[in-house]
Amino acid sequence: MTQQIQAHAPTQCSIESIGVPDPNSAYAVCKSIARREAKNFYYAFIALPPAKRNAICAIYAFMRRADDLADDESIPIQTRRKQLDSWIAAWHAASQGAPTADPVFVAVRDATERFQIPLSLLDELVAGVTMDLDAVNSGEPDTYATFADLYRYCYLVASVVGLVCIRIFGYTDPRAEKLAEETGIAFQLTNILRDVAEDAERNRVYLPLDDLGAHGVSLQRLLHRGNASVPTADEKALLQSIGQRAENYYASAQALMPLIDKESRPALWVLVSIYHALLVRIEKADFNVFAQRVSVPTIEKIRILVVGLTRMAWIRVVG
Image 1: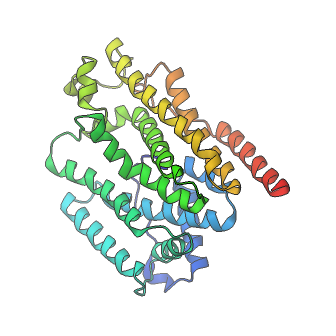
Image 2: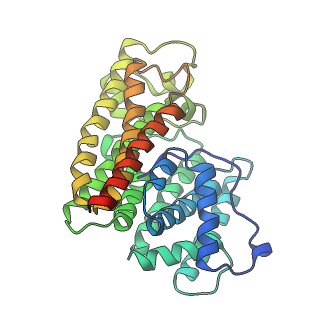
Protein backbone atom coordinates (compact mmCIF):
# COMPACT_ATOMS: atom_id res chain seq x y z
CA MET A 1 0.00 0.00 0.00
CA THR A 2 1.19 2.94 -0.81
CA GLN A 3 0.92 6.89 -1.04
CA GLN A 4 1.12 8.93 -4.29
CA ILE A 5 4.77 9.95 -4.18
CA GLN A 6 5.54 13.51 -5.13
CA ALA A 7 8.63 14.54 -7.05
CA HIS A 8 11.77 15.20 -5.02
CA ALA A 9 15.41 15.45 -5.83
CA PRO A 10 16.66 11.92 -6.57
CA THR A 11 17.62 9.99 -3.46
CA GLN A 12 20.20 7.77 -5.13
CA CYS A 13 23.38 7.80 -3.09
CA SER A 14 26.81 7.71 -4.68
CA ILE A 15 27.24 4.05 -5.50
CA GLU A 16 30.81 4.52 -6.61
CA SER A 17 31.82 5.83 -3.21
CA ILE A 18 30.52 2.90 -1.15
CA GLY A 19 31.68 -0.18 -3.05
CA VAL A 20 29.61 -3.36 -2.90
CA PRO A 21 27.48 -3.24 0.26
CA ASP A 22 26.57 -6.20 2.43
CA PRO A 23 22.83 -6.68 3.12
CA ASN A 24 22.97 -5.02 6.55
CA SER A 25 24.57 -1.83 5.25
CA ALA A 26 22.27 -1.90 2.21
CA TYR A 27 19.23 -2.07 4.50
CA ALA A 28 20.64 0.85 6.49
CA VAL A 29 20.68 2.96 3.31
CA CYS A 30 17.08 1.99 2.57
CA LYS A 31 15.98 2.82 6.12
CA SER A 32 17.60 6.23 5.75
CA ILE A 33 15.65 6.85 2.53
CA ALA A 34 12.39 5.70 4.14
CA ARG A 35 12.95 7.81 7.25
CA ARG A 36 13.54 10.90 5.13
CA GLU A 37 10.85 10.41 2.49
CA ALA A 38 8.14 7.98 3.55
CA LYS A 39 6.04 10.26 5.77
CA ASN A 40 2.85 8.25 6.45
CA PHE A 41 4.48 4.93 5.58
CA TYR A 42 7.37 5.28 8.01
CA TYR A 43 5.10 5.43 11.05
CA ALA A 44 3.82 1.99 10.12
CA PHE A 45 7.34 0.67 9.47
CA ILE A 46 8.30 1.41 13.09
CA ALA A 47 5.58 -0.94 14.34
CA LEU A 48 7.13 -3.96 12.56
CA PRO A 49 9.70 -6.45 13.85
CA PRO A 50 13.23 -5.58 12.60
CA ALA A 51 13.52 -8.10 9.73
CA LYS A 52 10.14 -7.13 8.30
CA ARG A 53 10.89 -3.43 8.85
CA ASN A 54 14.10 -3.80 6.85
CA ALA A 55 12.29 -5.50 3.99
CA ILE A 56 9.52 -2.89 3.86
CA CYS A 57 12.11 -0.09 3.84
CA ALA A 58 13.90 -1.80 0.95
CA ILE A 59 10.70 -2.01 -1.09
CA TYR A 60 9.91 1.62 -0.31
CA ALA A 61 13.41 2.71 -1.40
CA PHE A 62 12.98 0.80 -4.68
CA MET A 63 9.65 2.47 -5.33
CA ARG A 64 11.06 5.86 -4.31
CA ARG A 65 13.94 5.47 -6.79
CA ALA A 66 11.59 4.57 -9.65
CA ASP A 67 9.37 7.54 -8.90
CA ASP A 68 12.31 9.95 -8.66
CA LEU A 69 13.58 8.83 -12.06
CA ALA A 70 10.15 9.31 -13.61
CA ASP A 71 9.21 12.60 -11.93
CA ASP A 72 12.38 14.69 -12.18
CA GLU A 73 10.90 17.52 -14.26
CA SER A 74 14.32 19.13 -14.71
CA ILE A 75 15.15 16.30 -17.15
CA PRO A 76 13.48 15.84 -20.58
CA ILE A 77 10.89 13.07 -20.81
CA GLN A 78 12.89 10.91 -23.22
CA THR A 79 15.96 11.15 -21.01
CA ARG A 80 13.90 10.12 -18.01
CA ARG A 81 12.54 7.15 -19.91
CA LYS A 82 16.05 6.04 -20.95
CA GLN A 83 17.28 6.39 -17.37
CA LEU A 84 14.33 4.40 -16.09
CA ASP A 85 14.83 1.69 -18.71
CA SER A 86 18.54 1.43 -17.83
CA TRP A 87 17.74 1.30 -14.14
CA ILE A 88 15.15 -1.46 -14.46
CA ALA A 89 17.51 -3.45 -16.72
CA ALA A 90 20.19 -3.15 -14.03
CA TRP A 91 17.67 -4.34 -11.45
CA HIS A 92 16.69 -7.34 -13.57
CA ALA A 93 20.36 -8.31 -13.82
CA ALA A 94 20.90 -7.85 -10.09
CA SER A 95 17.76 -9.84 -9.26
CA GLN A 96 19.23 -12.77 -11.21
CA GLY A 97 22.41 -12.65 -9.17
CA ALA A 98 24.64 -10.28 -11.14
CA PRO A 99 27.07 -8.30 -8.94
CA THR A 100 25.74 -4.86 -8.03
CA ALA A 101 27.03 -1.92 -6.00
CA ASP A 102 23.55 -0.41 -5.69
CA PRO A 103 22.50 -0.74 -2.02
CA VAL A 104 18.80 -0.59 -2.92
CA PHE A 105 19.19 -3.52 -5.31
CA VAL A 106 21.18 -5.49 -2.71
CA ALA A 107 18.51 -4.94 -0.06
CA VAL A 108 15.55 -5.64 -2.37
CA ARG A 109 17.19 -8.80 -3.71
CA ASP A 110 17.65 -10.05 -0.15
CA ALA A 111 14.07 -9.09 0.79
CA THR A 112 12.50 -10.77 -2.25
CA GLU A 113 14.38 -13.98 -1.54
CA ARG A 114 13.71 -13.90 2.20
CA PHE A 115 9.97 -13.25 1.88
CA GLN A 116 9.34 -14.99 -1.47
CA ILE A 117 8.13 -11.83 -3.20
CA PRO A 118 7.42 -12.44 -6.92
CA LEU A 119 9.68 -10.24 -9.05
CA SER A 120 6.73 -9.68 -11.39
CA LEU A 121 5.14 -7.47 -8.72
CA LEU A 122 8.10 -5.08 -8.86
CA ASP A 123 7.80 -4.95 -12.65
CA GLU A 124 4.14 -4.00 -12.25
CA LEU A 125 5.13 -1.24 -9.86
CA VAL A 126 7.47 0.25 -12.47
CA ALA A 127 4.73 -0.13 -15.09
CA GLY A 128 2.61 2.26 -13.03
CA VAL A 129 5.38 4.86 -13.14
CA THR A 130 5.66 4.38 -16.90
CA MET A 131 1.94 5.14 -17.34
CA ASP A 132 2.53 8.66 -15.99
CA LEU A 133 5.50 9.14 -18.34
CA ASP A 134 3.43 8.08 -21.34
CA ALA A 135 0.71 10.57 -20.49
CA VAL A 136 3.13 13.46 -19.99
CA ASN A 137 4.93 12.63 -23.20
CA SER A 138 1.70 12.94 -25.22
CA GLY A 139 1.20 16.56 -24.23
CA GLU A 140 -2.46 15.87 -23.49
CA PRO A 141 -3.92 16.06 -19.96
CA ASP A 142 -3.33 12.88 -17.97
CA THR A 143 -6.86 11.52 -17.54
CA TYR A 144 -8.83 8.29 -17.15
CA ALA A 145 -12.10 7.78 -18.98
CA THR A 146 -13.78 5.45 -16.50
CA PHE A 147 -13.33 4.25 -12.95
CA ALA A 148 -12.24 0.88 -14.35
CA ASP A 149 -9.37 2.67 -16.13
CA LEU A 150 -8.46 4.54 -12.96
CA TYR A 151 -8.65 1.29 -10.97
CA ARG A 152 -5.96 -0.21 -13.21
CA TYR A 153 -3.67 2.77 -12.54
CA CYS A 154 -4.34 2.59 -8.78
CA TYR A 155 -3.63 -1.14 -8.89
CA LEU A 156 -0.20 -0.60 -10.43
CA VAL A 157 0.94 2.27 -8.19
CA ALA A 158 -0.70 1.24 -4.91
CA SER A 159 -2.30 -2.22 -4.85
CA VAL A 160 0.91 -3.84 -6.06
CA VAL A 161 2.68 -2.34 -3.06
CA GLY A 162 0.01 -3.90 -0.87
CA LEU A 163 0.53 -7.29 -2.49
CA VAL A 164 4.25 -6.99 -1.76
CA CYS A 165 3.62 -5.84 1.80
CA ILE A 166 1.38 -8.75 2.77
CA ARG A 167 4.11 -11.17 1.74
CA ILE A 168 6.38 -9.42 4.20
CA PHE A 169 3.62 -9.19 6.82
CA GLY A 170 2.83 -12.90 6.40
CA TYR A 171 -0.48 -14.57 5.55
CA THR A 172 -1.88 -17.98 4.65
CA ASP A 173 -5.49 -17.23 3.64
CA PRO A 174 -5.60 -16.46 -0.12
CA ARG A 175 -8.45 -13.99 0.48
CA ALA A 176 -5.80 -11.62 1.82
CA GLU A 177 -4.58 -10.87 -1.70
CA LYS A 178 -7.81 -9.33 -3.02
CA LEU A 179 -8.29 -7.45 0.25
CA ALA A 180 -4.76 -6.06 0.04
CA GLU A 181 -5.42 -4.99 -3.54
CA GLU A 182 -8.57 -3.13 -2.49
CA THR A 183 -6.82 -1.55 0.49
CA GLY A 184 -4.32 -0.07 -1.95
CA ILE A 185 -7.23 1.35 -3.96
CA ALA A 186 -8.57 3.03 -0.80
CA PHE A 187 -5.19 4.63 -0.12
CA GLN A 188 -4.72 5.86 -3.68
CA LEU A 189 -8.22 7.31 -3.94
CA THR A 190 -7.51 9.20 -0.72
CA ASN A 191 -4.31 10.57 -2.23
CA ILE A 192 -6.12 11.52 -5.43
CA LEU A 193 -8.70 13.50 -3.46
CA ARG A 194 -6.00 15.29 -1.46
CA ASP A 195 -4.00 16.19 -4.57
CA VAL A 196 -6.73 17.33 -6.99
CA ALA A 197 -5.44 20.93 -7.14
CA GLU A 198 -1.76 20.00 -7.28
CA ASP A 199 -2.35 17.39 -9.98
CA ALA A 200 -4.33 19.88 -12.08
CA GLU A 201 -1.35 22.23 -12.02
CA ARG A 202 0.68 19.37 -13.51
CA ASN A 203 -1.93 18.76 -16.25
CA ARG A 204 -3.30 15.70 -14.49
CA VAL A 205 -6.90 14.91 -13.53
CA TYR A 206 -7.25 11.49 -11.95
CA LEU A 207 -11.00 11.81 -11.32
CA PRO A 208 -12.68 9.64 -13.99
CA LEU A 209 -14.08 11.60 -16.93
CA ASP A 210 -17.40 9.77 -16.78
CA ASP A 211 -17.73 10.88 -13.14
CA LEU A 212 -17.00 14.46 -14.19
CA GLY A 213 -19.74 14.23 -16.80
CA ALA A 214 -22.23 12.69 -14.38
CA HIS A 215 -21.75 15.65 -12.01
CA GLY A 216 -21.64 18.37 -14.66
CA VAL A 217 -17.97 19.25 -14.13
CA SER A 218 -15.83 19.82 -17.23
CA LEU A 219 -12.23 18.73 -17.56
CA GLN A 220 -11.11 22.23 -18.54
CA ARG A 221 -12.85 23.70 -15.52
CA LEU A 222 -10.90 21.45 -13.16
CA LEU A 223 -7.64 22.14 -14.96
CA HIS A 224 -8.04 25.92 -14.86
CA ARG A 225 -10.36 26.70 -11.93
CA GLY A 226 -7.65 28.09 -9.62
CA ASN A 227 -7.27 27.28 -5.95
CA ALA A 228 -8.89 30.20 -4.11
CA SER A 229 -12.60 29.42 -4.34
CA VAL A 230 -14.48 26.74 -2.42
CA PRO A 231 -15.92 23.83 -4.41
CA THR A 232 -19.18 24.47 -6.20
CA ALA A 233 -22.11 22.18 -5.41
CA ASP A 234 -21.40 19.96 -8.42
CA GLU A 235 -17.65 19.85 -7.69
CA LYS A 236 -18.37 18.89 -4.08
CA ALA A 237 -20.77 16.15 -5.21
CA LEU A 238 -18.06 14.81 -7.54
CA LEU A 239 -15.46 14.74 -4.77
CA GLN A 240 -17.93 13.18 -2.33
CA SER A 241 -18.57 10.35 -4.79
CA ILE A 242 -14.84 9.56 -4.90
CA GLY A 243 -14.66 9.82 -1.11
CA GLN A 244 -17.50 7.32 -0.76
CA ARG A 245 -15.72 4.89 -3.07
CA ALA A 246 -12.63 5.20 -0.88
CA GLU A 247 -14.69 4.60 2.28
CA ASN A 248 -16.11 1.44 0.73
CA TYR A 249 -12.63 0.12 0.00
CA TYR A 250 -11.45 0.85 3.56
CA ALA A 251 -13.82 -1.94 4.61
CA SER A 252 -11.41 -4.31 2.84
CA ALA A 253 -8.57 -3.02 5.02
CA GLN A 254 -10.52 -3.97 8.13
CA ALA A 255 -11.27 -7.42 6.71
CA LEU A 256 -7.58 -7.88 5.85
CA MET A 257 -6.36 -7.18 9.39
CA PRO A 258 -7.10 -10.60 10.97
CA LEU A 259 -5.74 -12.48 7.94
CA ILE A 260 -2.10 -11.39 8.34
CA ASP A 261 0.37 -12.57 10.98
CA LYS A 262 -0.34 -11.22 14.46
CA GLU A 263 3.03 -9.51 14.80
CA SER A 264 2.36 -7.49 11.62
CA ARG A 265 -1.18 -6.35 12.46
CA PRO A 266 -0.16 -3.28 14.48
CA ALA A 267 1.83 -1.94 11.50
CA LEU A 268 -1.10 -2.40 9.13
CA TRP A 269 -3.42 -0.84 11.71
CA VAL A 270 -1.14 2.23 11.94
CA LEU A 271 -1.01 2.62 8.16
CA VAL A 272 -4.76 2.21 7.67
CA SER A 273 -5.51 4.55 10.59
CA ILE A 274 -3.30 7.34 9.22
CA TYR A 275 -4.65 7.09 5.70
CA HIS A 276 -8.26 6.93 6.85
CA ALA A 277 -7.63 9.91 9.14
CA LEU A 278 -6.57 11.83 6.02
CA LEU A 279 -9.85 10.96 4.28
CA VAL A 280 -11.80 11.99 7.39
CA ARG A 281 -10.02 15.35 7.40
CA ILE A 282 -10.88 15.88 3.74
CA GLU A 283 -14.52 15.11 4.57
CA LYS A 284 -14.47 17.49 7.57
CA ALA A 285 -12.98 20.20 5.33
CA ASP A 286 -16.19 19.85 3.27
CA PHE A 287 -14.05 18.52 0.39
CA ASN A 288 -12.34 21.89 -0.10
CA VAL A 289 -9.09 20.44 -1.42
CA PHE A 290 -8.41 23.55 -3.51
CA ALA A 291 -7.60 26.17 -0.86
CA GLN A 292 -4.86 24.16 0.83
CA ARG A 293 -3.40 20.67 0.93
CA VAL A 294 -5.13 18.63 3.61
CA SER A 295 -2.83 16.57 5.84
CA VAL A 296 -2.79 14.62 9.11
CA PRO A 297 -0.86 16.57 11.78
CA THR A 298 2.31 14.94 13.07
CA ILE A 299 0.93 14.86 16.61
CA GLU A 300 -2.01 12.75 15.42
CA LYS A 301 0.32 10.38 13.56
CA ILE A 302 2.42 10.00 16.71
CA ARG A 303 -0.70 9.25 18.74
CA ILE A 304 -1.67 6.52 16.25
CA LEU A 305 1.88 5.14 16.30
CA VAL A 306 1.90 4.96 20.11
CA VAL A 307 -1.28 2.89 20.01
CA GLY A 308 0.29 0.66 17.35
CA LEU A 309 3.48 0.16 19.36
CA THR A 310 1.40 -0.67 22.43
CA ARG A 311 -0.45 -3.30 20.42
CA MET A 312 2.85 -4.70 19.15
CA ALA A 313 4.23 -4.94 22.72
CA TRP A 314 1.06 -6.68 23.89
CA ILE A 315 1.25 -9.24 21.10
CA ARG A 316 4.85 -10.01 22.00
CA VAL A 317 3.86 -10.55 25.62
CA VAL A 318 0.75 -12.66 25.18
CA GLY A 319 1.53 -14.19 21.75
